[in-house]
Length: 570
Image: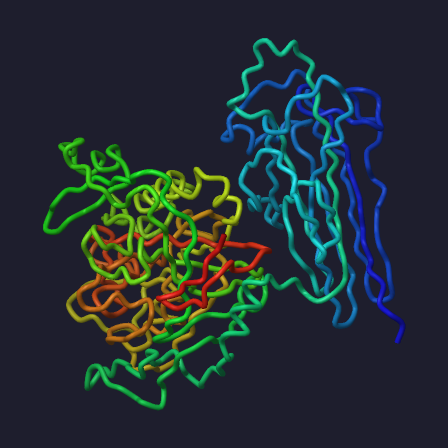
């Protein structure tokens, strides 16, 4: 067999912007070619094409703008669409990467740190899915051997394809809000070329994933495994909590998610501990006592719920230099690690703020009556729930404010599954009036029908047409109820999974809607030492444990994942 040759595509488009961009191969400040030539590589069973559309970024006299404005621009000349397609036959994989390259030749150049790029994927319904947050131009020091991208370019997005598909993308670029044009003399220029690189070969597997797979023997899923907790516990409608020793399950398992094969930890595992990030300064939260302590991320959010909250209600959550510890929930199909916050030491489990495995404790939503929409992580087509605002505030004030950490945290997939909302007579709640359920209840709450069907957790977000909940790309979010069941939890029974806080631990929120009845919404939550069915009413006071997705090419710098020697992500 002939030695396989690397197939690499290096394709480009020049974006033109006075103050932001000017193309070197075109007349100054004007676009003279629509870019309708199809650039491609073809080799036997593989064809990959990159096609430029007729629209082009072409801004004259650009002024600084906010992310809120820059990320939604749709006027002609303010965005650029392109398509990447593949025609693949057989068992072949292409790793590809979209990047930007500074090709400015003018002496009057605006620095790339003042230019932001923002890339989205265009869905079939016309909606846009963010693939990166707005980021200032910054070149990678190292090449990516899996995709063929050289060093010295800004990586915008990396993915792979192993079947024929077509993906449409949209790029926006603008001058950062912080830039002050006074005194710069005007007409500064910045030229960028958008490149797509692709190589056939095995799907890229980061060193972190290779380490986890090497350290954990992959376990086989058992029939109807999710009717049981990882300790064999299950709920019998006639006899209550029971145990089946044959269904004790611990270790690393696999399931499909939206990006490929995901490897998830289940049961009483002890080697999925990670240290990543640290608090750069003393971090304070604001507390009130109302039948229990509540902790808020800012004075404003505390006052939003309790108007009397003031500076005297401030309490320290962490000190400058305190390291952040996490538990690995799973390896995502895209190779990133999905982590859940576990405090400032790897054994933090107490419900007190001094040794907390959470960053806050609050209501899910300040509104929770009379409308099922308040079960959504967002509602009314994008209004943030109270808990989402708390998660975002914590992230932006910690990891998000430090580029050394933020650059490794990707826009990961999150799901607030509001699908399947309906009244269901399969579940018998006498004298409780009309009761409505979301599809998660049918997937995960089959103990209420004595397992007429098997529990069926999923890592794929169902199609959602409601104006609340949905599928998101976020820097930080919350765990889902499905992930808790995969990890070994089971509604209504006590377990010993690594995600169970124990009898004295803090209850904590998921982002999965559960049910709606008696004019009040409920969200799944870890309630005491079991997964609660409807116990997470959105006016309850539960802990907030952020979840992030981290991707790095450099692997773990040390550690073996144990409590005494956590994996360290540099």
